[in-house]
Length: 603
Ligand code: ADP
Image (cartoon, rainbow, N blue to C red; front, side):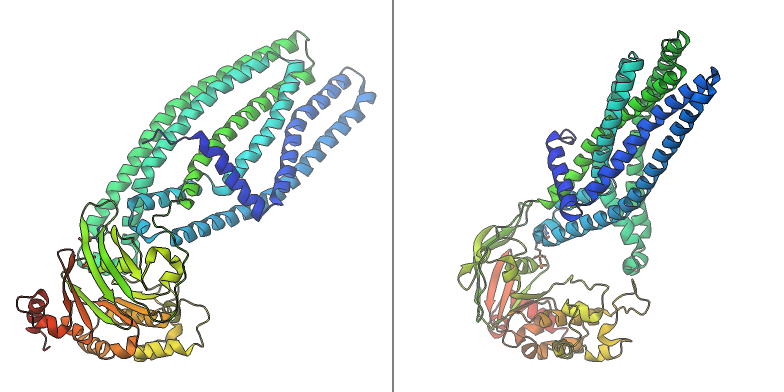
C-alpha cells in the first residue's frame, strides 16, 4: 500500500501545475520572488565578506597604521549596514505580499476543489474510494504541502540556496579547501537521515487520512446542533464519544510511532553536527595559528563554512521539501482528474412532449454483486402520473436514480423520446427533471433562495404561486422576514427552524419552481399531517399540471390520484395497472397492501 507513495513521476507535473496556476493568476509574483531572492543571497554573502574586510582593517589599525585604515573600516561598516537595511525592507514588503497571496491561493484551491466535487458523477459521492481521494486531496493540498505557495516557496528557497552555496564553496576553496569535503560528507549523512524521516511521515499520512475522516465525521455529528435531538433521545452520545475516542486513540498511536522512529534519526543528526563543527574549528584554528590565513580570513572561513553548510542543507531540504510536497499535492491533481464513471453525451433535449422508456433494465450498485433491479420494462407517456409502490428495499428509489441518470444501468437501456439517455448532455438532461428525494437538503440561506436557488428571484411572482400551491403561504406570512427569513440559526439569530411538514412543502415548492417537464417525488408527503397530505393529493393535478409525474408513496390512498401504478417486488415490476385494476386483483400484492392499509384509513 505504501510502495507507490513516492513516485518521481509526480514531481514535474505537480510543479508544472502549481507554477502554471501562479503564472496564469499572479504572474507578477515571480518578479517579487526574484527581487527577494537576490536580496537574501546578497545579505548572506555580505554577512561573511564585510566582517572579514572590517576585521582586517582593524588588525591593520592595531598594527599602528590607524590613519590609513580607519576610513576604510568605516566605509565597509556603512556599506554593510546599507545592504542589510535595503535587504530587510525588500524582504519585509515581499513577506507581506506573500502572506496575502498565500490566503488567496488557498481559497482559489478550495473553490476549484469544491467545484470539481460538485460536478463529479453522483455515484462517486457514495463511493468510499472517491471520498477518501477527496479527503486526501484536501489534506494533501493544505496542511501537508502548504498548497501552491508551499511548493513555489520551496522552489524559491532552492534557487537562493544554490546561489549562496556556490559563493560559500568558492570562498572556502580559495582560503581553507579541506573544509569542503567535511561539510559535504556531513551533509550527505544528514540528508540520508532526513529522507528516512520523510518516508516515516508519508506512511503516517496515509494511515492518518482514513482515521481522520472517520474521526472528523463522528466529531461533527456530535457538535452539530441539528443532530442534537437524535443524539439525546437515543442516548447515543456515549456510543459516539467512544467511537471518536477510538479513532482519536488510533491517530495518537500513529503519531507516537512516528515520533519514536523520528527521534532515533534526530540523535544521529546531532552526533554528525557536533563532529563536523569540532573538526572545522580545529582545522581553521590551526591555519590561523600557523599564519596561513589572516584573522579576517579566519572569520570569513568560519562564516563561509556555516553558509555553505546551511545552503547545502537548504538545497537538500528544499529538494526533499519539493518532492515531499509534490507527492502530497499530487493527490489534488489526481482528484481533479478523477476519471468519469459515466459516458458524457452532447445531444440536446428537444422541447415539447417526452416519452420515457425503460427497456430490459437491470442494475447492480458499483462494487456490489447484488442485483437491485432486474428486467424493468415500462413506458411513461407525456403527462402520465405514475405511482411507484413496494416494500422497503424493493428498488423504488434506485429506479428514480436511474431515471435521473445519477447511475448508469448495468444492462438494458433507458430512452427518452426513443434516444438512449447516455447520448444527451448531462446538463440538458437534468433540466428535464424536478425531483424531491426523501433526504432532500435545505441550506442555511433564505427560504426564497432555498426554493429558487437564485439571487434575483426577489420580484419573481412564480415563487409566490408555488408557495401558495404547496399550502406554504400561510406559514411564510408568519415568518419574521417572510420569504427572506434565513433557514436555521447557523448565521442569523433570527433564522428559523421549519417543522418537518413545512420543510417537505418547501422541497415540493422548489421542485415546482424549477418548472421542469417531469416531476419526481420520493415519498412527498411522509412528513405531512393527514389534512395537508390530503390537500396535496387533491391538488396534485393542479400542482403538477400537464407535466409527467412519478412519485413513490407508501400511502396507497394517494395512488387513486394516479393514472398508473407500478408495484416493485423481487427486484422487478410485479404488477402494473390502474388503481381499480390492481385493487381488484385477487391475491395481488397491491390488493393485499391496499386492503391492509384500508383497515387503518378510511380509503
Ligand atoms: P426502496 O426505495 O424501495 O426502499 P432502494 O432503491 O433505496 O429501495 O434500495 C434497493 C436496494 O439497493 C436495497 O437493498 C439497498 O440496500 C440497496 N442500495 C441502495 N443504495 C445503495 C448504494 N448506494 N449502494 C449499494 N446498495 C444500495
